[in-house]
Image (cartoon, rainbow, N blue to C red; front, side):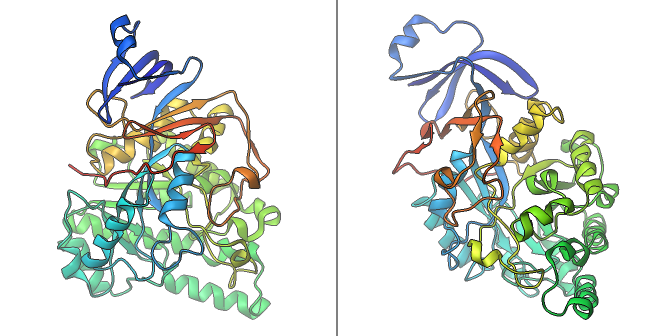
Length: 445
C-alpha cells in the first residue's frame, strides 16, 4: 500500500486537506482527518505532500504522438513521457499517422504498440474517410474513444469533403464524433488571394486570415447542423474564434449532446504574438485575435466550452521554418498544458477547481471514461502533485519532447509538477521518469 499524506486535495469543486491510500492500482481510501497509526505502519511507501496540491490526472482528449510512420517528430514512448511530466495521465490520440488509422486493423496495431511503449493511459480515434463507413460501424465503443472527422484538411490529408459521406457518418455512427472544423474552399480562396500579393512566401502573420474566422464558423455550423439533424453525439475540437461560441449551449455537460474543446494555445497566444514566435505558434485552426482569445477564456467560465486540451502535434524545428505555405502546422504542448492553465489561476482568470473540472473531470464525463478523472475511492489512482509556489523555467535541458523545442522555452511558470502517479505507480518524480512502467488502455462506459 502507498499513502499520499497531508495533501491539499482538489476534486469536484472542493478543496480540503487529506490523505489518499492507494492499493492495487486504485484509490482505496480518502482520509479527511488523521490516518490511523495501524495503516501508516502497513504502508510500504508514504509520500509527505504537505503544502502540495493533489489533483486528478489530466485527460487530454486530443494529441498527435506521430506513431507510426512519423516518428522522427515524436513517438508514443517519448511523448507519453513528456505527458506524465506535465501531469497528463491519459490521452486520446489522433488517426493522421502513416499509415492512417482508418481501419480496425490499423487501430488494433496502435493499441498493441501503446501497451508496450506508453507511460500514460491511452486510447485512439478511428479516422473517417469518404468511404470507410463500414469500418466506422465496427468500432468497439467500450475501448475506442471516438471517430475523428477532418472537415478541414490538416496533417495527413484526411479531408472528408463528400456531403453524402458526412451525412452517413452522422446518421449511422453510434458513438462520439470529434471534428476538426475548417471550410476548405474558403481557405483555398484565401490562399489564392494572398498568393497574388506575396507569391509562395506569404508572411506567417497572414495565417489566421487564410484559415479565417469565416472558414471555422461555417464548418463548425455545418457539423452542428448535421449533429442536430441526426441526433449525433458531437464534440467540436479546438475552437479558435469568438463567433463559434454562439453555436454552443451553456447547459450543464450532462445535458449536452454537442460539446466543444478549447486548446491551451488558443487561450494563451494571439495574433499579436506572431512577430515574436513566428511559425512556432502556427496551428490549424490558427491562433487568432486578442478578442478571440479573450472570448475563449470567457467561454470556459460560461460553460460554452467544456474541455481544455492541447492538440499536441510535434514537428522538428526546421519543419517550422518558412511562411504560411511552407511551415508545418502544430507544435508540442502536452508537457506544459497544466502549468499554463495554473498560471491562468495565478493570474486570476480561473479557480484551480475550474481547471481541474475542465482538464480532468469534464473529459472523463464527456467520453464516459471508466473509473478515471476523479479522486474517488475505487477509481484508478491517476494523480498529480503540484507545488503552486515553486517556479519552473522551461529550457532545453528539461524539455522531454522528441522534437526538442517548446513555444514556452525561456518562459517561467509559477507552478511545478512534482510527482505523477499512473494507475497507482509513481512514473514521474521531481524531473525523473520511472522506466519500465506502462499505462493501460482506457475503457468507456
